[in-house]
Amino acid sequence: MTFTEKANPIFRTVINDYHKTDNVDAPIQNPYEQGTIEHDLYLKNWIDTVQWHLEDIIRDPQIDPIEALAIKRRIDRSNQERTDLVEQIDSYFYTLYHNVQAKADATINTESPAWAVDRLSILALKIYHMQEQVERQDATPEHRANCQKKLEVLLEQRTDLSTAIDQLLADFEAGNKWMKVYKQMKMYNDPDTNPVLYKK
Image (tube, rainbow, N blue to C red):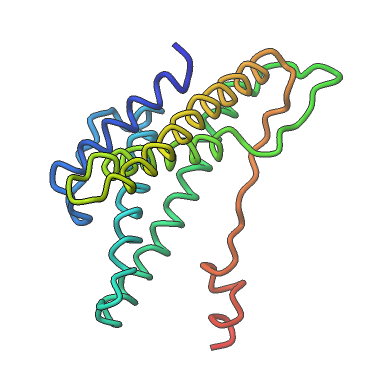
């Protein structure tokens, strides 16, 4: 089983689990043991799924400004949790491949594997919600047909991205690529580097 053959079903399970309540405040029920990559993948997609729906809520033109600010702050926290978890997943890959001897002509990739997995997680959400639009009975036939075309593109993207991730991991295992982990070093969340905060 390839890595994405493991990850994609977990992402689908998470999204289905979330939509049992469709509530951004519903508690997570992660079925996997903490410290496993499956646990981290489930948590990753749960964070993404909750944030997806927070982004929907905050776009309500009638939303109370105080509530909107509270949601914006929550989205900021979610983004930091998402970034931290991506780095944790990259650490998993680094541990997995750090003993592999890189070949003399090994190259570096434009992004780490976990950031590609991040895109795969978001893609699972796009597919789920585009499928919803395809099946909407209150929408026009034109809307559903347009969404069907978009859905087909998203499904193709998932196939391509899954293949690319698995090929990248195979390159790490074979020593064709260097596995490196870079911290994002986000500055706006840090009171020591955000001038609005440290100049208070």
